[in-house]
Image 1 (cartoon, rainbow, N blue to C red):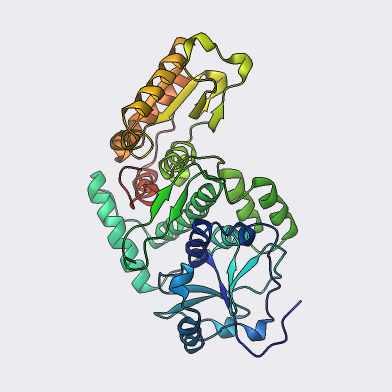
Image 2: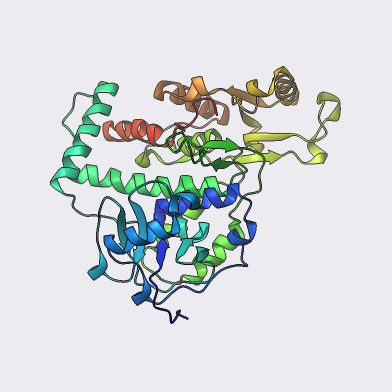
Amino acid sequence: MGMSVSKTYALVSHESAVEAIWALAARNWKDLLDDEGIWLVPRAENCVKTQKDFKGLDAEANLAQLGIRSRPVDLLVPDKACFSRGRLAQFHVWSDFFPSRSFVRVHDRVFVSTPYFAVLQLAMGRRPNRISRATAEDAAKEDARFRAELGLEGKPSTVTELIRWDNIARFVRATQVLCDFMGTYRYVPPPEDKPDDPPGIVFKKKPIVRPEVLKKYLTEMGAARGIKRARKVAATAFCCAASPMETMLVLMLTLPCTMGGFGLPRPVVNWSMPKDQLRRELFAQDEIIIDLCWPEQKVAVEYYGWNEHYGAGRGKVAADATRANGLAAMGWTVYVVTYEQVCTLAGVSLLARQIAAALKTSLLEPLELELLWRSRLLADLLPTSNRRL
């Protein structure tokens, strides 16, 4: 159902919606992120369609106060005739229907895509079969930089290979965002007087995307364009990561070699050991939760982050070390990981080989192009806002 009004409305989407969602979550506006509070979207003719329209709306709504600070802002428009890319806004064509739980209203004239819809947009993305000369030149420079770092002396990547990586990077970004939304941490926007500061992180929060609701949402989309890719993102993502570094680790370790990962079997993230398996005399805690683990093989990875461990004092480190020792006493193989160990390709490669040995599985040897993509994948996934997360 549309809205019979004369005003134009902005439908915030893609990365701009992700930015706004974190701002909403930081303010604990739960009703705006849940099933209730979803507003009907305006008719297509009422959408902001031009850079001039957007400039006027930005001045009226003060999007920065709503958490939408990066420019250009991503907006949805109804057809290709409205398509435009400028310094202020870039428009994405969406001609399909909007299922329920697609938008929340944050201002009289501003609708923001919900986490479910934003993930769908990132997953579907545009899948180009060609790129502009300027884009190709920029991509080639980035490609050359990574090749130099890896000491690869082969031919530079072709345009086709650059396009293949672009599609991989888009898929991975959608998966990473979904892991963030289903994790127990949240990004906190910087203060308004310091807009250029990196976002902060808060921990031990409820996830803002529930897998069962996401599944229902994607089902409602039916056979919409790109829905298969979106469902693949949902199947690839992990629930319950406790920090951005846990998300980085699990994706690096499990994504297939053809996407730059190591192709290890999927672990369980933040697994709670069943009470009937717990030997209480070996632990000081009543509940044992393991960051990443393969329960059947009794292999565990514990990430020791700065904020959750060293920043919290020696007591936290000691408690987690005691837990790791208890797991070892029960016959588990436990790998304790810090940022410094996995912030380089050599470090995360070593960890992957160690885990593979414990799982009694073998890693596929990457092709030269896949090794290049592995380096780029790590650069894309590694948190940059705080190097000790």
